[in-house]
Image 1 (cartoon, one colour):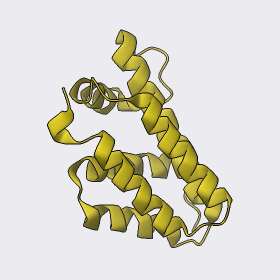
Image 2 (cartoon, one colour):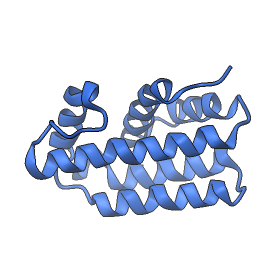
Image 3 (cartoon, one colour):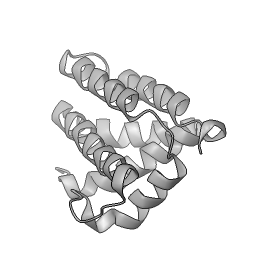
Length: 131
């Protein structure tokens, strides 16, 4: 069964929440769901959509403008995320996401790449460091 991009967006939120909390069981569950179809492109789509989701959060963080969001139907979740993590380093988040994308394109094990990405995100989104 092929997942479309709409189906991936709740998984992105789950992955970001689990990464922030260090909920490794949930991260593993998301990773397994993405790997089940054995489709590398699904995981690449997931990372691309996660970057778009984070772009929305970044834009909201800068100017509280909800009008130009890619994920317009997720405004409430994005605004809460942006408010909670007001002082995070979005540039570093994007670097880690881009590196994960390159690693998966380079045929590295997607489960390991996603888990490493979650560890990196946990360090950036550490709840104790949030505003």
